[in-house]
Length: 173
Image 1 (tube, rainbow, N blue to C red):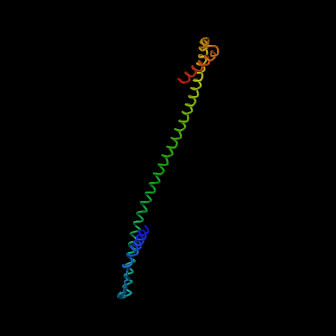
Image 2 (cartoon, rainbow, N blue to C red):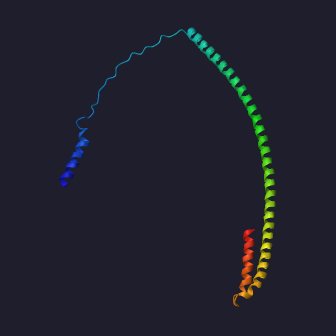
């Protein structure tokens, strides 16, 4: 086992270091070559002045063209801004109309909800009254059948009948 590890270690060192040893890069020695610089022939000052005037005239012409383009772009931009302002005011008016419509709808919904809660309170109140009347009827019916039950249970007959009749009315209404 030790021999295998030793051989692998040697093999690893040889493969990692061995590739660079014989193939080391050699530095190339280069010598700069001289380049001849050509100087332009000097122009007479009058010709330079004319060329300078032509260049300035060309720049002025291009600046005028750019200025006219900018004026046209500015005019279209101003028209677009005015159009956008008009559309913004229309959108604002529509938003205000929608807001007032929403407020009215909320007020109507609140009014209908209040009517519904009042109706539900009235319904539950009437349901309770009906259950109490059914319980009273159950007590009277239980008193009629009270003599059929043995004495310790005979008091439970009217109470049970009242509870049964009240529960039936309560659940079915």
